[in-house]
Image (cartoon, rainbow, N blue to C red; front, side):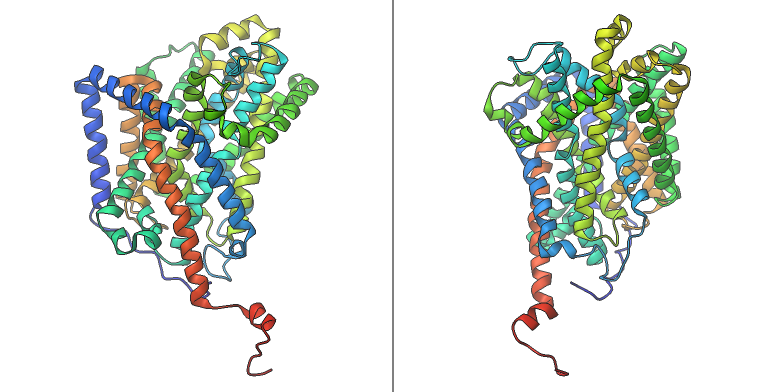
Amino acid sequence: MHSDAPRGPVPGRRRPSPASIASLAVVVLLLLAALVVPDLFGAAVDSVFGWSTRWLGGALLIGPLLLLVFIVVLACTRFGRVRLGRDDERPEFSTAAWVAMLLSASVGVGVVSYGVSEPLTHFLAPPLETVGAETREAAVLGLRATFFEWGVMGWGIFGAVGLAIGYATHRLGRDARISTALRPLLGRHHRGWAGQAVDAIAIVATLFGSATSLGLGAIQFNSGMQSLWGVASGPWIQGAIIVAFTALFTLSAVTGVARGVRWLSNVAMVIAGALLVFVAAVGPFAETMGLVARAFGDFLVTLVPMSFASYAGGYDQEWLAAWPYFMMAWWIGWGAFVGVFLARISRGRSIRQVVAGVVVVPGLVFCLWFGVLGANGVLMHGASPEFAAAAAGDAQSATFALLEQFPLGAVTIPVTMFLVALFFISGADANTHVLAMLAGGSPERPRPGGLIVWGAATGAIALALLVIGGLGMLQMFVIVLALPFLVIIGALAVALVRQLRADAREEGPGPAALAAAGVRDAEG
């Protein structure tokens, strides 16, 4: 399909696009409202959040499942062979570098922050009334629920966005905006107000989704400082961490993906792998793997039923809003960021290769990570009162509290802090590239000035929201913004199929189809 070389990427605009101006204006107005009338603003956000989770929460679970099914089915069709680029083009990055960038730049900070605390939280307060707290069944349920929230579900979102953007940019030579990928549906209106509105929603969702991760990373790093050096935990320290890391990731972004994100991601993956092996080796290995194996089996069996948990009954509604709804909303909020970044690093790969990579590898890696750390946290809770007290006092410090119970804590804790910093910087670095691309820049080389502006904006939003309302405010924002963007992601999936079919008709049947029909070429 389109075997001719695609046109070069559309150059970045010298003037800011209307979508970027509108999105920044919306963000500024929201932050001003939060500063001037914080009580009224908080009540409004809480009201919208409550209505969204009550009436539309089910869509946050069913939507990602449908997108996962979509990309898997697409990969199994004849379109699975189509490359994101020329037919003879080969991948720009090695498979190892591609996987490292995908994992590190997507949800790296989250796996450190929630690796121990989330399974432990579900273990102490199971979401099902039929399961008793602090039992083996609660441990399995806690791991299973965590696998659902961090496994393959979110990667259907990323894959759908990444394939739509990657096909439009690398195959058709178009720019990397969401509105451009919707051209098969919007037609000429993709350049009008409809397209600008879509791009503005994508930018705002990306900004707040990334701000959540930056705030989470600052809290996690501060917890490590408190554990290691006794530094007090508070918004001013966390704000200083955000400012410092914003400067670092913006500098990294200006150096380019190949040098910045790839190097940071490779180092982060090596450290994360070593930490995972260490925890598995020094902990109760047999008990840990027994819990992981059983929970993973239950996860596979209950994947589809859990996606309909909103309507099946039995699950605590507050738990659904606090965990599955929020986590899926976070994935959706990151859909534009990780999807566009996935498209950026997937040039030369086929649709089938991309789907296999984003479904199989992250799903297994994250289940193993959360399984090993989470199971060790659950088992340590009963064996160590000190760990139980520390984890109950501050969920963000659970990972460091666990490492304190193992040998070499004086080494593993600073190494983990360094890992948080790497995930923090590499994710924000990639996010800055994506924001510049969504605003209309070149998919290959966004302008340095744009990278600096979007990097500063991301850090400023994370800092402002952390001071105004803490992580809870960030989480509510993410859920409210995720629902409209979920509709846009669904439209991207439809647009991709329509574009693939149109291109197939334009090229006509291939040689195999002609031969089957009894057609011979001139030489025959």
